[in-house]
Image (cartoon, rainbow, N blue to C red; front, side, top):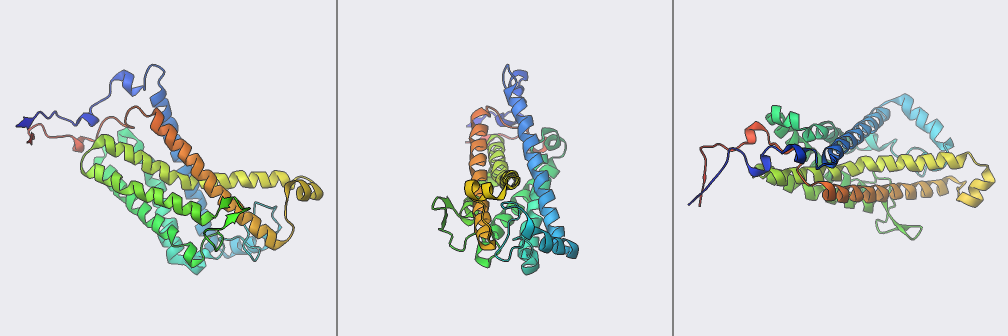
Length: 308
């Protein structure tokens, strides 16, 4: 018994005009434009931060700037270690392969390629590039997550030494937050690859979006750091007494270290909550795949039929 097979899989058929617009109000197309712009902006942000941090660790001038400048920065803006210096200053020197080659480089690769995967025109015109970029994205994310999970045991993470510690009795550690984020990302890798290998295009596009949103949480964490830093700068404009009595700004190096380490944990959990909300909204409003047409090379040969 043979089942009828059309020229393209059902999930790869071209959308109707109304469906492409996402309904009468065009919500689908507008949301996808926002989705693409948002993920692209977050990718660029992480490339700039990661690349700048990488080059900064290699520059002696930057090291001297960190050493002289960071201790005097307002509370919640310096991300100080126990010595009063920027916590990331010595990580690349201490573990160049782990932190540089296995963490920063894969993150940059992921950010460089991921926006192109959500552009339908690129997928249709350059299917081979789409496939190879996709494999590079999944492999780089696997390396990125595993290297991130190995940071805290090597004392390369800005986190409390006890992973079960609660900052202020409420907020779990930065390591706990990033571990959860990494596990969510890892859980999206295999389905994204398997659905593509099985040519299940609708399911593949669904998992590709989920993988993208899970990865974007890392960039969102940097945004949350920026929000906390902006708060710290605003508070620093107040007089010293108000800062201490009303906002609890510490004065000693040890207290600042503990406070900023707790703030880093807050940024991780903020980004997880924001990412989860974005994921929920994406699942709710997405009534059709990101791109309704599959690349030409993905189309089913008319001469082939499934025999049962």
